[in-house]
Length: 371
Image 1 (cartoon, rainbow, N blue to C red):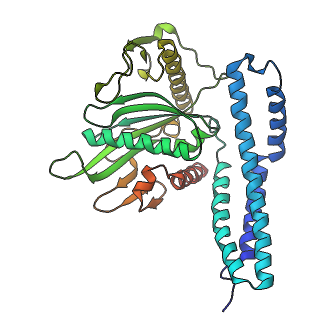
Image 2: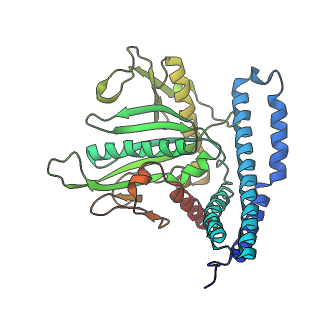
Image 3: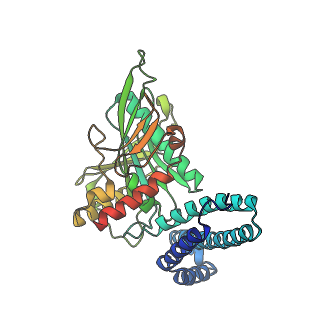
């Protein structure tokens, strides 16, 4: 019986070649030069005089450092794996080779994840993301599903240690939410999550049906890139209607007793955004304006390039247009209808384990563009 169950040499050679390609695409020398330049800026005593620019620089610096560290750590693991394989083969040590095989599986998975990162080279892919979730057809079940999707994305962000900023949540009367709007502050959050845009479909025994019938419900996910200072979006104040109202929580519970929540309506486009996460009306208006400008930018670019589906996805949230199904009854399955990616563990997916679906979506999008 042979001790070597797999061809380690061929596997390692392929992984080394993939890492070399990744290094070329990422252009590590250029990244390190930019890190040095940004670090020099942060050392300037006047750096924090411009808070907005300082935050932007720090975010970029953090993202670059993370990318370089991730690459170098993975490269180190690959080198260590080569040494482990060599030791196991020379000594004929089955236990060492079994350990190497397990590490090979982990390293391959991480290399594939890093490779996907190199596919995010679209115009806005490096931006942070603003995510909007809306309940669709399906009544109270749809509202409950929308809330589950919000939790899914926030749990995904928590797993990756990405900060989440909730701008607005409109709670439904019985359960769940009508809509939610939140930002995920991380480099490449838009490029990563943009493949999640579209209509999501849930099939389950409804907990809100006294007769225990199976219910199908829908929710829409929209993802737009965060605006940057260099983006030119001019908004005429006369084109905006501002409404103020009292912030509220589930069941009509008041968050505070002042009219601090703000709703902005951009009259020409019909885009409406709300923010109620701050206690100050001025702060809420500023946050709402950030979201409004991001949505107007997405709309403008979509119209210019005729790529509305690529930027925002198909968000009708009804029969016939779903991109992913979550089936909890009569069997357990989550399946992406575009990529074929699936899992029999919906609970894990709804708890934020969606990296496999995201990576498959990014690869699918790249192949679709290539065609």
